[in-house]
Image (tube, rainbow, N blue to C red; front, side, top):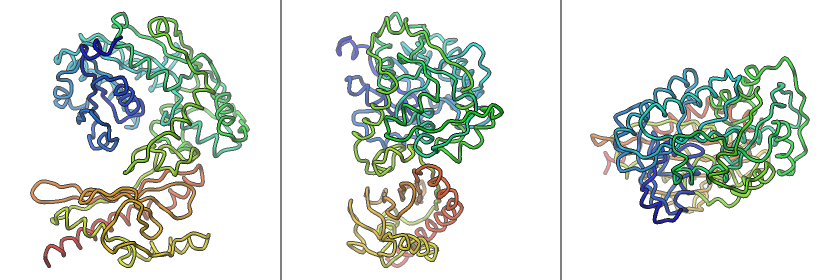
Length: 487
């Protein structure tokens, strides 16, 4: 379809743009010259992506009052939200969100909703699978035409299933697994799926239909992990199926072997005891594609990561934040603390930007020093207390063992962790103006673990992190307020 006709069809809304598919779909639409509006519950998460020529909006499908504004003037809406990370009752939340969105889309006069669902085995009892199916049914009960694309395992950076397999392949040479590792599924390359999503709204015959999307192979999870190991240059893992280990039981140890958010990983694992099949003939007839096989899909995923740009602030999965290491986890663990102050953003920034060096870290410096000594004992540079300038910071500066990777005066400071540890970390300070002359200062540590050792390192320090960052932000607020009094 020509660019002119695309523009006649109008703006596309990516609802759930902060998620895995949404964050990849937005740049693909932009590359096609299609006007895009991106929406998420938190607009600041989208702003961190630094997308050019994209309207950024905040909206929540569970809060109907927020939907009218993001749907106004939109031709096609991609519905990409789910509530798996919410834990229990996520299925009920998904259905309510879909009903709200369908009603708001009808009121706004949307031409088409495109919904990304999942493949559905006939005998499935998984809440995750049933929720994806039922969400499509709820959307179709509205008056707006829906095109549903059902996909299985998506092969690309950030896909939950792909990231679980990556973590296992890189860091567990021997796996005691349930029999589900021999269940079969037809994976699809992220690039192929994005092509389908871009093109189906342009085809009138796709309105009101449900399509299966899959690659050219059907493989077991064990076979996929062996191929992934080959592409990664790793020794193939020894997989030992244990008949008594059910998917439900195996889901409980996931938090100790993968950084994929536990709620999402458990919901995913719960549906892996089934064989998945796909009938792709109808979709291929409307959108003929040269489909990548699984090996090609993994190679494309790793190549995409290596081509990614360097970010000036932490963004989930950003390759630069993972020290450009394929074996470091895509998803980060995090701990944060915050304080509200009467000081101005300028006063808070003056304190934040002076951190480290001779000023040290304002709170529980003994613990900071202990960590630096441990780094020095294993050959690191933890005891080097240094700064180029006592107050000013610029990208590339060293602050003790940290490296400054992003500076936004009076808004944000981002620093990469430089001590020796099994993973990659980022520390960010964020300054946020509030009503009535108040300001919030937040400190957040992000940790991309390198396998089981990286996760163990994080869990051992997480309680201390929460104490430190709460006290640190309170002390920064106190010092900033003292600056105001002495000014």
